[in-house]
Amino acid sequence: MVRIEFVAAPARGRVLRRERRVRLGDVTPSGRARFDALARYLQDIARDDSADSALENPMGWVVRRTAIQVHVWPQFQEALTLDTWCSGIGPRWAERRTSVHGEHGGHVEAVTIWVHVDANTGRPARLVPGFAERYADAAQGRGADAKLIVPAVPDAGATTRPWPLRHADYDVLAHVNNAAYWAALEELLGSQPLLNEGPAFGVVEHRQPVAPGANVELAADAPDERGAFGWWLLDGDEGVAAGWFSRGVVAFSGAEAHNGQR
Image 1 (cartoon, one colour):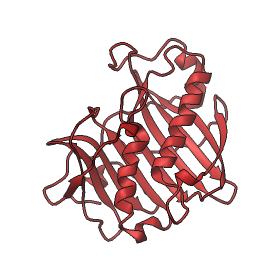
Image 2 (spheres, one colour):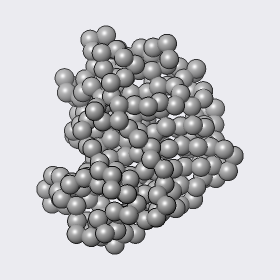
Image 3 (cartoon, helix red, strand yellow):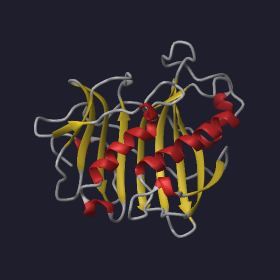
Image 4 (cartoon, one colour):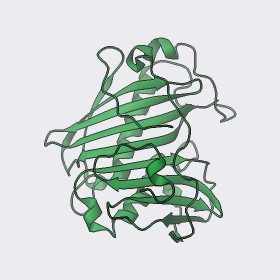
């Protein structure tokens, strides 16, 4: 069983720190930072760390899974400090932890599985020489598990709607950008005001690329009594991304998203 863990920052090893501020384009009408903005912060600091490492193929990473635990929502104009480090190492992927703290109490924890890919073929590739030497101290001997744990497609009771992709959703890798997937969750939360209050947990798993022009649909379960629900982006009958959301601070292993156990 894969259990998502938000391990503490290491006492030794590489930790990269960055500062940024929550801007106008990052927030909901209520002023809280959106999930897609948080995802953008995560990928930006990950890119900074990869480039700063001076290792080969710094752009050769794609996200497999991101989990975000919001303890206190960062707010408009709040200054944030982000710390990121490698929290686990696998043969062709690695786990990255990021901790976000704001000047007014904003607090977010995140953990992402990044898969290392060959720059020419785009297929998973072994980690580059020197990776372990650069990051092993921070990882503290932990491995990283890239198995997907959210159901690939919804049950028959899920509601669906079109989710048109924009040209602006694609990035320099010709992929739908990681942050764009989280915008789908924000669309669902927009019609559920009570789910926008207090601590919240979200996870997104990426199953396959989305080709330009694909007819993507957004599917979602109805929230249960705890405000938890699964959601999916579908290309025909195939799931291209799967997510799960819940209010509160959550210990998530994937079992919560199966068989209605939300």
